[in-house]
Length: 191
Image: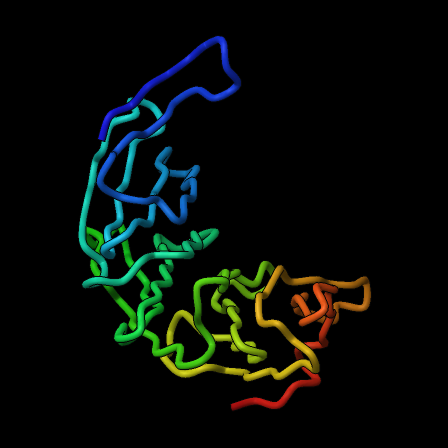
């Protein structure tokens, strides 16, 4: 990969690799890093300061990484890969342990190329993702979903968490007719 900068344009750096597609990227501000999820299951970690690659590893075999989520306090990166034969598409990586995979989660029908994983801002040990009308909420400590939600007409992508003054938790999802649906989490059935 090579880096390019252009002070006349609004972008600062550009990463160029003619052999891979980058499908996801996230900043890890507390480490001054950014990570990319690519074709063929590769993760690359770069320094924001020097713009150099500091780590590269294969997270999956033959799967494309479509979603990344950085835990707000733990040294964890969650990856989601999609491919027909991908087992355990959701994986948690601990960068304090040399990017060791510390958890594998079978997403089943709850994961696809449109899925985005989101950490719960009020309970950072949980995160959500959805696909094909099914939303799951998982814990970073377990490979089984804590909650399975099937909102009516849900297209499947979790947009975000929402909280009200009454401290109720909601998940915002996209419906089949491209509208947003707000669903109450605690009113849902636990798996």
